[in-house]
Amino acid sequence: MSRLRVVFMGTPDFAVPCLDRLVADGHEVAAVVTQPDRPKGRGQKLTPSPVKEAALGHGLAVMQPEKIRAAEFQAQLAALAPAVIVVVAFGQFLPKAMLELPPLGCVNVHASLLPRYRGAAPIHWAVMNGESSTGVTTMLMDTGMDTGDMILKAEVAIGPNETTGEVHDRLKELGATVLSATLARLADGTAPRMPQDGAAASYAPLLTRAVERIDWGRPAAAVHNLVRGLSPWPGAYCLHAGRTLKVWRSEVVATERGSGRPGRVIAAGDAGAVVLAGDGAVRLTEVQPENRRRMGMDEYIRGYGLTVGETLE
Image 1 (tube, one colour):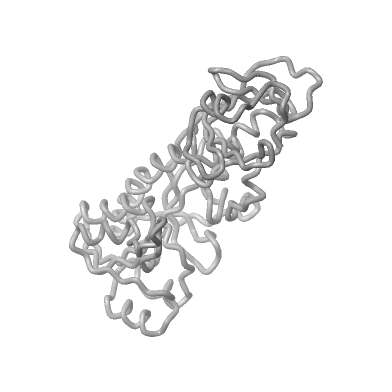
Image 2: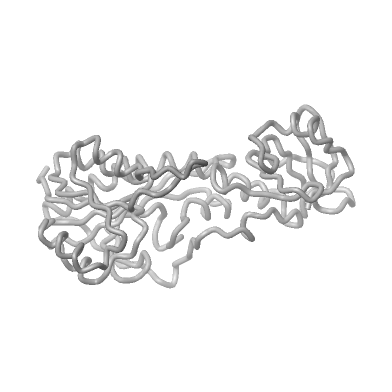
């Protein structure tokens, strides 16, 4: 494989396997650019990003500009003279001058089958929408939001009970494999370049508190998809007795719908709580009360007195 001089830009855990693969493939990683250390946890201790930790483990130079548009940083980047810039969940938009800097372009690894689910939270929305498959796409970045020409794709199935966290962990490894193949094709001049069909595009915007609240009036499958789509972060929630109750695990159950109001608890015991939805019912099996740890629904029922006939809001 031809070796390329690369600048890598990434921040979260999702990007780490891609950086590891660049090193394993023998590419010359001139620098790793990641977000500045941020306060984290109860003590608000400054904490490096997962990509910074991985880069230092490889002995690579790390750059942490607060704003990549700053002239000083752009001059430093130009001096590195990369053949290609690889961007994986970096967290800032790249200005046009930076996109035009490397001769082979800026390659992004996106966690969806573009042009579907462009945007910030593609895995969350694919799971929340009950998609049966998703994947990874590499593309040559342009000034739009995930609108660049596609290079390679790889598809994976999403299981009916898989969480976003589980899909995320599979995609981050797949992303490294697709990136490796992409750079090999760029290096030997055989990389395809496929324009996206804008008419087929969909979007995966940032998650909001409103999105995270369970609407019990929706079908049971939609409630279940919301729960697994927001696990392990940030979590779907409802209200019990006026207090927030996050729901981490659920399942759709076959039951007579009856005439109860959506959100009404129709069974509560060792197997969890069965709650009516707009169509069907959902069994809650793992929850987290406000300011408390996660626990099984049976423990919550015993500790917080949830009973049949109550309504979750």
